[in-house]
Length: 159
Length: 80
Image 1 (cartoon, rainbow over the protein chains, first blue to last red):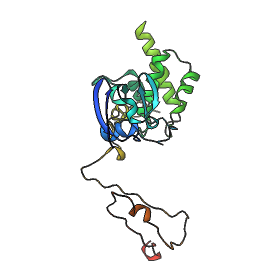
Image 2: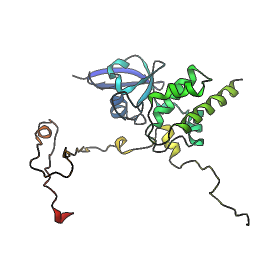
Image 3: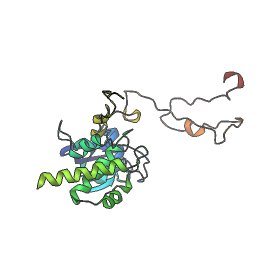
Image 4: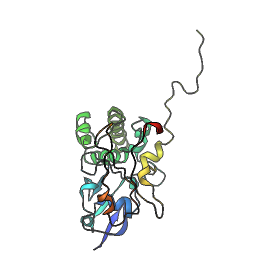
């Protein structure tokens, strides 16, 4: 039996049909065609499927799709404002903080959640927060630099 | 030594596919689908360099939506 679910995705109302055991990741990719959210492990280890659910950073592979009824889901597709990149996206490009790009949407979604909670993270705090996101290409240093540089730019902008 | 002017060396170019990758627009293999697309799965030998004695495709045949299960023959020395 299919369940009918109404939710909000990136600020827009969205509806889908899903089975009770389907994951949010599955529905985002297969039903809503938002394939920016990646499946890495499907067991909550790699963070490639990171999304924000009612303000909380989660692995969408560990969330059941019917759970998002009436809630707000934010994905990588909602991070840029139209053609204008989010500062994190710009800094990831400038610092070459991505290579193959599979982990990148998850890192950007997770880093955005970090900076919204803590606009001035130490390197250790940033590394700890992003420990749930795995990257096999970059060696993490460039990602951390991009995140810390974004944080300082955003702090400068609000001062 | 004379100063040489390079166009690329010493610059920090932004990767050409970077914009698509940071916005989630990049289409990787798993992000791509076509109407009526079929999905395949390769059943590999659990042992390296072993002689294939039998292949059990019963699990694939039991899937409700399966179209076809192809059985491989051992690759002979001549076909390498």
